[in-house]
Image (cartoon, rainbow, N blue to C red):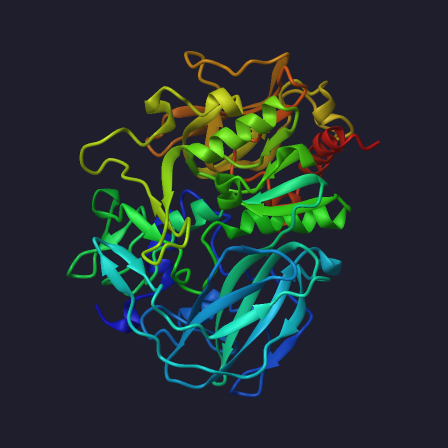
Length: 486
């Protein structure tokens, strides 16, 4: 397969489009106030528009995984103010490049603000990725730039925008976190992001926990995918994870309305770096499918100690995974999930007698091929207060991507009260009638546990074309009660 035929939307992202209509990147709505001039003299925004990667003209050029014009990854996903983070970058052909650091937030509707810019850096062609049993790793790449994070930087979600002298661009996401108390801890799903990462999308060597290629450049399914994937590699395509949009939608909305947020990643939860007692609630804003046993124990411990849990997507905590060190001994740089490959213990939580419903209150039911309305249930409940929603009202397009529901034959978590706040029919890929549900229960500790049961909840908060004021208000009602705000 020729290089010109390898395009992001023809491989991993296209294969997942039906399961996440909101998660594709890069994100053309993630705008900053800065503009650049391309090599035609036309002024363009900083982000890389995927249309251009498919042969369009008139804007910045997205680096691809065949030519690797510029690609990079960070030495760690999260860093504290005052510490440093290393970037490993390949540039082909060798030339100078720069790194613009943006912080994600509302910022008057721009979605991001530029925080700093690196000096001009010398780019080199790094060695090809190392591949063992479909595990792709770039841990042997030389360090290209060290960012010393000033102590005064705001915690939050950041994006490093890599730009070559000739105008090719790619991205590296990372998080700035600390352990100060806050009302809400936002937990970014970096483990799930990496599970979907098909880098390099070159039609030959890339692999995720879902896909790999055969010798003829055909995209293979899970039975031939990687069992272990590495965090020591760029994200495919433009360098942003497939499902990153869900988290950014929530961040822009929450920061706009002044919620007191701390930030972490799921590997922080896994490694024990999260003290739930510092927060009133943990918020899981996006598609969060892959959980280790340590992650689950941390979430259950948080709930049992009185910290509320908010799950704003669907298909959460579905696969059980393990995290291990890299070849050089750096912890939590390899992600393993055998799925259906070979002998061994099952990988689904529900198959090891720990169904996800025992934490969430509902669990994964299946894909939703086309968006359907969310049908409001129990509209007298305080979650729907002041939304204007009534019983049986339909909120268009709110059941999309994937859906959860209550399974009557599966045990529920211990609870003082429990309610289903939506019951929405939809048709699956076989045309069969299914239904989605939204759940809320109160644990004996007093913690609230909310699960939206759909991919479309976070996009309804701040995604252009998808905003719904009823979902905005319902989310505010939930978070205000958790944070004890009037």
